[in-house]
Image (cartoon, rainbow, N blue to C red):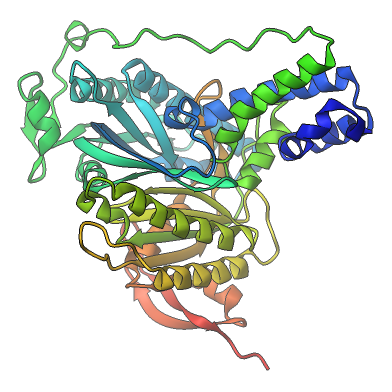
Length: 517
């Protein structure tokens, strides 16, 4: 039995990082050959997790549970893709086949953009739906804004490949267009959470300004904030955009745009084939891999990690069009405190955020959901949650409602730390909606990618959240019809939402359950 082998000392570290069949085989047959199979799997999983995490995680490998902060300077780029919803709707009628076709188009798009970002010296921090957050770190040359603008122009030129995409019906064609915003400033990075679930967040007003720069931009153009424009005004021709913003004119020849800043290194090589037959050496090599894997694994939600573990051998997760329930939580008050933090208070701020995040994640996990990420917003931070992917339940709407109420109560009861002499008012806005989405591994199949959920349902949930009042949970009529026998729901009437052709009937989820006795 396994207890009689050297692997017994690390069994608890292996049980969640091995596919079920490999774990069982290792347990009943702890031979050297089986240990080598374990090593091979972990080597593959190590590569997968490197691709699933940003360089600030995969390279720095923060210790799970160790809350750290660091002020960084650089240029932030936000992108937004227009036309995806129409392309998704055109493919959804074909089911799995349509999902595979849609993934091919998105893979081509993201692979192109990621290659440009990488060769231009940028770090892809996160995917949020079809949007990207990229950081161009400040270096000795102080050319981060220059690199960001050059990358943006290259990306817009590459978008010509995505004009007139043929749809399955052949009756119409869809053109994808991208909006890019660039802002230069500083931001506070924080690693928060527990050893079981960590998250890397960016905090500060400059993060919000970068998002504003993108949202105030124009499709097919690179939009700059005043701060970014001031860094490159003598190197590019620009025209005034919306008040306080500037649009870069792409009037450069290929030679004037210049070569890429970084020579591509290509796909990293796998470690050499494992040849040793010495048990102790095999265990030592497995332990080394675990030491590298565990810090990255803690940044992946448990259900997604399980999916990656089981699919590591194939290195492919099939795309699909499921109908999950989506929850967006806008956490306001504490993230904005970063700019007021006095030297030494950054850790106190991060510890406060870490407590909230950890409790919210527990509320979601205990109800069978997935806290996908904490991301940027025009104010505060957004917490993105899914029920129904990658694991579906018959009552995901009820689970989501229960989690939303628990989260709202946690935030309302949170005792915020005093930062910069001010105790911030902390509150939340919450939206819940369900519907068809596109779920797949988004990004470069041979590089940076993430398991992601995209589509109009996700965008609509964000709109519901934005329409909420302080500590209010706004739900769609689709959710209300499913949960009304269990929860009190107050009608808010028909509400016009950004990006929607017609008003939606919305409801407020009351905190108490309906009396059904």
